[in-house]
Length: 234
Image 1 (cartoon, rainbow, N blue to C red):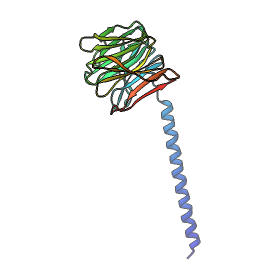
Image 2 (cartoon, one colour):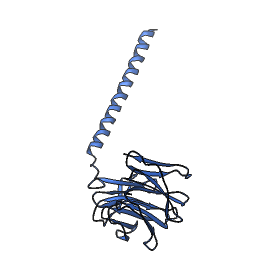
Image 3 (cartoon, rainbow, N blue to C red):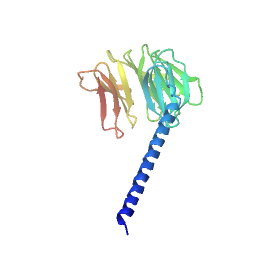
Image 4 (cartoon, rainbow, N blue to C red):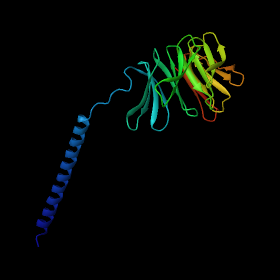
């Protein structure tokens, strides 16, 4: 029996099989690339720069931009759920209140606005700052909102009535960010004065000012157990 002939034939068949598989892979790859090339380019969510983003849940985010709008975006299905128009200037900060199902926006037009996820119109407009509003955050119950601005003011608001509960005025305290603790007892706030301050929310007074850093403090956050405070600087 001619074993060499048999083995040679088998080897040739195997080589041919691999060649066919490679051709199929190349064809599939070309087809996939052509499909991607033919797909219509996605429209930008904002027509100008995006200034702030807030996670709403595992499929949607909230964003605010220089186009004066805020957008609720479904990034799983890649579609705009709702777009709100109502500010006269850049939307600097956005926030979502899960307890009350409210969207909050802070703007360079010096206002804070509340929005309902089922309506295009603002629910409430808060007036109290004299310059761009640069920081907003809810307490855990979403019943009180804290805001900061370049006007040196930190304001505590009653969410239900939209009334000011307390205004704290601190010289050179140009706010950049504010975060409420998870137990609701204090607020951390960073500013262009290179300091991070702490406010007791029960008395709505400043209780701590951490040592001044070398550079402007741009943002802050608090750990889930309220044991650690982190801040960033530029």
